[in-house]
Image (tube, rainbow, N blue to C red):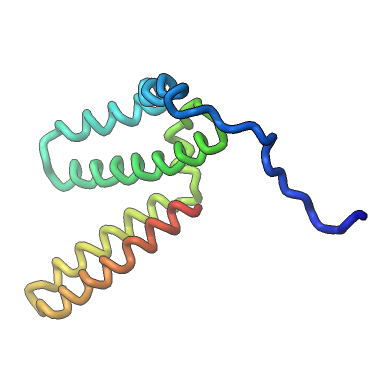
Amino acid sequence: MLCSQQLDWQGDGEPGTPFWQRSGEILQYPLKPPALWLILSLGIASVLSLGLLTGLLLLFLALTLFVYSLVVIAEVAGDDWVPPSPMDVMSEGGLLVKQIVLLITLFTVPLLLVSTSMVLAMGLLALAALVLPAAVMILAVS
């Protein structure tokens, strides 16, 4: 009997390749050019003298690396073993920039208010601790 419901692909029924047989691919993954460029740029930025500009650059690169790792997880889950371009991270509709602004706001505003009201600053930091996991989940789901 036919139904009007859409069918979902459930796979071909073959078991996946065991981890130990794919360990070579897994260990070589960060040595492929797109992933290697991102790792090298983070390494170079980390040896620069610390200042506000360097701190912002490190924050940007760390968040880019975080989002890049989520993109890598999505690609590998689809059985694509070629590292995505770091520019794929930027094409997430500006979500990375929004995350950076959110982090800066969540953690600098309480620091600025510490001299005015310790209770307010601690309350905002507690709010930041609750908002941060939700922001990471939104980033992961997207």
